[in-house]
Image (cartoon, rainbow, N blue to C red):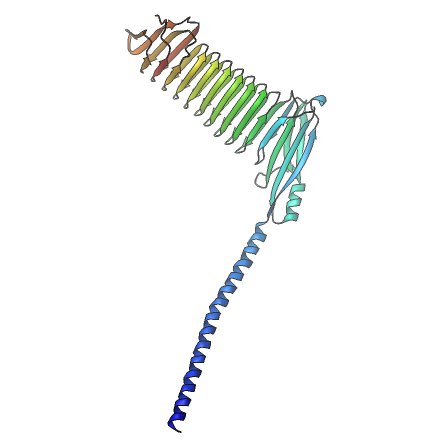
Amino acid sequence: MTLRSKKTLLLSVVFVLFVVMILDFGIRKVEPLERFSEQFADVERTQAHQQANHGVTKTYERELEIAGTGAGLRELQLSGTNGPITVQRATGDNVSLHYAVTVSASDAEAAARKNSAVNIEQHNEEGKVTLAAMAGGKTIDHDDYDIAYTLLVPAGIKLRLHAEEESIRLEGLRGDAEVTSRGGLVELAGITGNVIVNGSYGNVYASGINGTITLNNQSGTATIEDVQGDVVLDSRSGKQFIRRVQGAVRGVTEGGPVYVSDIIGSVNLSGHDGDIGMDGIRGDIKVVTRSGTTDVVLPKDGGFSYNVEVNEGNLLTKLPFISDNPDNENMTSLKGTTGTGKWKVDITASFGDVIIHSPIEEARP
């Protein structure tokens, strides 16, 4: 074989080896891509399987008509089922209940079966109707169902409502109501009637109440304003803001503050381990407090007579008739009059401070 032939053969072998190497690299590169594609397809199949097993959630709308005042209905009671309760005034004499049932199930057919098992039963006892959500003749399981209620109620029917960790809203009603809420939101607007709110660990807002409102507040925050009627308070570790009331404010607060402002009427409060703040009170003031600060800002257009005693605390005011008690070195008194003296300021405090901001014109002991 000539030298030239040998070179040609060698170049051919090198070329073949180069082609084989390229093909091998391509095959090795395709294999990981194929494996990755297979893994991605497996993930898609797994997700689809999980979604199928997780099921569906569906909401069904329903209506219920209840005979009203014409049939002797006087009182209506309803408890929430993992959903809000909204109550408005009806235009007619009957009660109308709209409720939206939300269920979760493995598929749409199972959800429809669960929904069809739900029923709102009525228990009538001498004009007092209790509405109860049932499923298959049994008390409904709150883990399986969420129900949002909307009630339309005619005037003159008393309401008793209860909910936990959900909202209750009453608007534009003409009748008495009692609302009990734990860990939720209570909203009352434009109510003509007496209202009782039993709230704990939640929030209460009441506005435009024409009647007496009684608040039992445990560890919650409440705002009450624009009331034509009395406000009665019983608070345990709660916080209250009460303003713009044409009526008396009275009650007890323990372990939390109460702030009262713009009141046309008397204020009578007892406090323990909580601050009391007052501003713009046009009426008699009576406060008995222990271990808290009482801060009173009196209006300039009123006259007050003062009978204030502070034991183991500070009495701070610019009024000129502060005196010490010769029999008790820890007691300070404030006794005197400003203006006409027609309204009384009677405060007894121990282990806390009293601050009084008052116009001093015509002040006299």
